Length: 70
Image 1: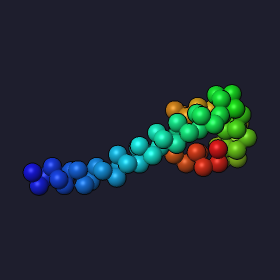
Image 2: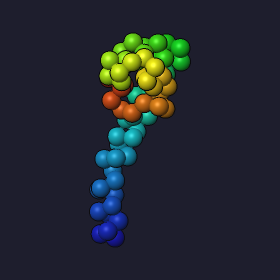
Image 3: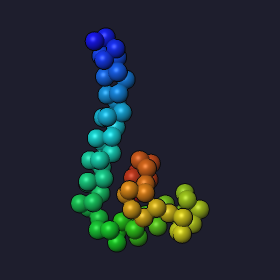
């Protein structure tokens, strides 16, 4: 039982971050259409990714960091 409690304590922060990321994705989907998301990503993330052709244009392709400039 102690081991299970330990695993729960270790895993809980990661589960919380995952839930936060899913909630942020849902909010972004509400705020932007897929076309708007692609255009916004190209404009705001091109300097970070080194050009518009290398920018991820869907939320599934992005990690947590690109959400901030969106």
